[in-house]
Length: 275
Image (cartoon, rainbow, N blue to C red; front, side, top):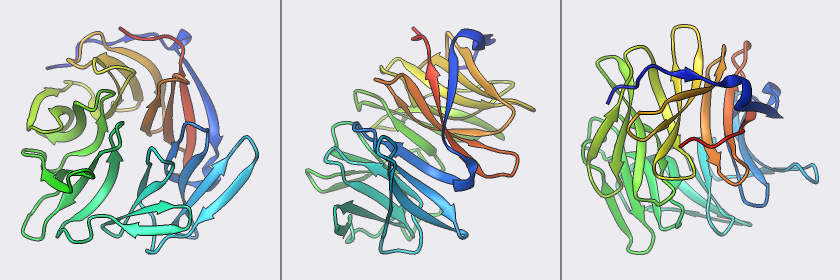
């Protein structure tokens, strides 16, 4: 599906708020239901993991058993799953354990579904040339490689946990791929003029928020999952990356690259819903 001509409604649909300035050079972040952030900051030329409670101004560095943290995700119990050095660890209070240590696969970019039973990640076995998407089922101890997802990145679970949107490259253009978590990709959203770099789901399985790049501008776009009814709801001169959509707060958590090439952490408020 090709993305149609876009309408632009920035004046009444966006508001940004600074969470952490570029001094921290945030590489990844997330916020739980209690308002506690984790964020991975590139300090002293390596990545450090922090917990931050803005309401009480408490900042805590989290020590992990590897060189540097790369990505992380909250669990339903308030623990953190952290990827580093091609491995995944679960951190809960003072306990650290490695996940799927007996499976011969390197793992990056963990993403837990809303039910908390399936972990999605980019992985690669020793005999494979390309990385692809895998799921790990905590209940049944089942590791599954998703067919046809080689070189897929920036995956996102839909609210029902039924669908996944991910990004890929076709004919030198970034496109969005849709798939069921248990099956191969079934649809593609592409644009003639924009690179669709990544997307996250809105409050339903029917709409997406996508980050798209043009020649000089970068856009946050709301669209249906078939690419229709597309609206530009925010634009930036600087590249940015969507981390997640916080449905109850109606905010998108994002990283925005500044002129010094360091990232600041921001939220973008969605002032109206898109149907």
